[in-house]
Every structure is written in C-alpha cells, then in structure tokens.
Image (cartoon, rainbow, N blue to C red; front, side, top):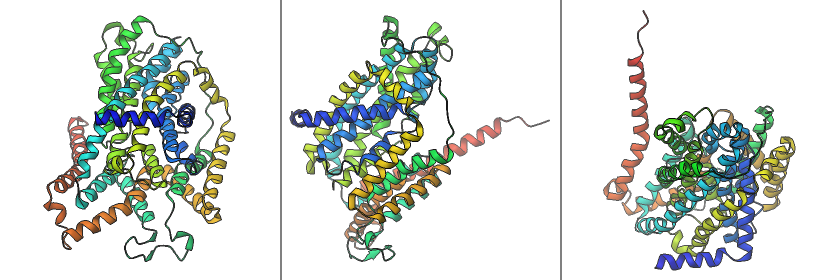
Length: 506
C-alpha cells in the first residue's frame, strides 16, 4: 500500500501541465533522435545537459527519460523503412523489418514494433516500480566496504562488457578515474593535478566531459571519417496488423519481454545481447510457412520479439542506475552525469533523499510509454521526413548547441578549449575502438569510490583485509573476479575447441 501511495504521489507530480509538456517534448525529441542515424540518445542527452541546467530538476529528469525512452522507439522506423538503424539496438529489427517493407508490409512491421515496445516497456516499468524500492532498501544496510565494492563492480562490468576489448575498456576507465582526481582533495583540501590552473580547482565539470565525448566527438568523427550514404526509401503502407499478424506477434512480445528484462536488471551492458537472443529464439520456434519467411519475405516475429526485448532492457536498466548508481550503457552513464549535475547521486539513499523525484520519474515512464505509442503509430511519415535534413546542417546545429551550452555554464573560454580538447580525445577513442562510457563512469564514481575506500580502511584500522572480513563485501569481491575471469576462460575454451575441430592440412 505504501508503494502504491508513493506511485500515486509520483503521478500527481508527473501530470502537472509543465511536466507533461516536458515529457511530450522529450518523447518527441527522443523519437526524432532515434530516427536520425548516428545521433543516439547519449549524444542528445549530453548535448542538452548544459541547456537544461536552469530547468527545475524533476522536469529536467522527466525530459531526459523521455529522450532515453523515445530513442528506442524511433530507431525501429528507419531500420524497417530504410535498413538504416538509428542506433545499435535496432540492428536486429532491420534484418526482418526491412524485408517486410520491401514486400509491401511496412505498415505491419511498424505497428508490431510500436505496440511491442509499448507492451514490453509497460511490463518492465511495473517491474521497476515493484523491485527498485526493495533493492534500495537492501542496499541502504550496506557500509563503506560494500559501497566501495559495488562501485568496483560498476567499474568492472562497464569496462569489461562495453566495447570489443576489456583492456581498452579498463584503459578508458582509468582515464575517467584520472579526470575525477583533478581538483581539490575531498579530505585534505590540497590541489591535485591542476597544473596551476585556477579553473581546475573545482575539478573538471562532468557536463563538459559528457558533451565533449558524445556530442562534439560524434560531429568531428562524422566530418573526418564518415562517407555519404544514399538510402532508398520504401513506401509506407497503412500502419495496421492483420489477425494472423496479431497471432504471431503477441507470443513474440511476451518472449521478448521475458528475455530483455533480466538483461536490464543486471549490469550486463547494452541491448545487443537480448535483441539477438530474442531473434534467435523466434527463428528457432517458428515452424512451416512462418519459418520460411525468415530472411526472405521478412517474418513479423523477427521484428516483434527483438523490439520488445530492446525496450524491456532499456526500461529495466533504470533499476541498477537508480538503486545502485551503476549505469549499463552510454546513455545511462550520461543520465548518471545529469543527476550529479543537480547534486544528486543515484544509489541506495536516493529513494529516501529524493523520493519525490524518483517516483515522479517512474510515473513519467508510464505516461511516456503511452505518449510514444500515440506518437509513433500516426506520425511515422513525419519521422521519416527528418532523414531529408542534410547531414552538414544537422551536425552544425549539434556543434552550435554544444558550444553555446558549454560556454553558458560559466562564461569561460577555458571551458571551450577543454570541451574541444575532450572532443578530439573522443574522436581518437572512437577511431581506435575505445568505449567512452567507462570514462564518464570513472569520472563520476571515482571520487565517491575514493571516499568510501578511505572510510572502509579507517573502519578496518588501516587494514585492507576489511573487504574480505564482511560477508557482503567478500561476495562482491568474488563477483568482480568472476566478471573478469569467466569471460576469458570461456573465450580460451572456445578458441581451443575451434582449433581442435580444424582438420589438419594434408
């Protein structure tokens, strides 16, 4: 009953006219961002962080969650019509959705994607509502050793899972930790790594790093390395589904939701694994005529399942973000920066220190989910027209937004040099396949982890053995070691088995 009362209070806050307007704006902008190839939700949120700095915090978080949520819907539109995924989570949708479009069934593909996203998003939001407070209540009982190990787990999972190489992920993490050390020491007050620059005494602003690594780096990378892509557009048929389409889609939506939700709840990183897993499941379960459509005419299950898995994962990812402060993707890492920009640290205390904000945010997910269903079905034609915006003008607009926003925070030219320096660093990281999310995570959680480590060692009277003496802390140490070791062992076995199966040359 207490949970229901808190949710109702959240709805009371979320349905105020100004918050509904911010939710609608976020959903519409997020969908547009999802439609445009290369401009992901992380770029959009990072670009708008400085612009919304003066907006009331609840409205701002509702706005950002709308962008986050909407981008997952919008990516399917271009995947289906143009075979051009707006973001990586829609790559699987393009496999069957575009074939359906080429065979005159674009309307059915778009409908099953939109409705499947709504179903999965709503179910996952209910799970967030029910389980996030329980996770937070448990986490509140933890002490400094456990908090520190939780942050180490966040560092490990984000660094080891995101990107192609764990070594590159760890390198990016240590870069973020180094940036987080710039400024005054939290305890002694001594200046660290400032190079004599007064502007660095308060540390490097997380907004500058997020905007530089995501928005500025995206534009510079596109200008330097990306060629022109000419896409052919399929005719948009009426967005509806036949009775047979419904019969095939409903089980796929349910299975996709079941597959995607656990991947969001654990720090597994990204939506690629659950969407590919959902696609493989649907292909394996299909029979007869339905199975024959996979890879030929386009199977509607191959769109319904992955889209449901995608949205379930995205929504459930708010559980580790809100309750433990652990981001599982680029976008949640930037959202973590958005919270900190307002002086709020997501984690076990969030439901008590900022309960009204959290419940308003959760309530806005229900509202945003419904808004997105209404926006996506009748407005597909409008979203597709966004693709006619020339890339140079689009990227120039992003660069102007990023520059004005960064300068507007402190009216400092030093910040602009720093912004573009970080942007160039982001270009190098993208060029050599270094993930950027660990930099943001390391910079945000690094100082907090340092403080918790000092407190834990003080409790242990100067001994680091304190981390092995407490059951929960020891459990987290073992989990961190498993995250680091198990993937390498499995990879070694797979390589060895493949080598043994290769016939010797005669």
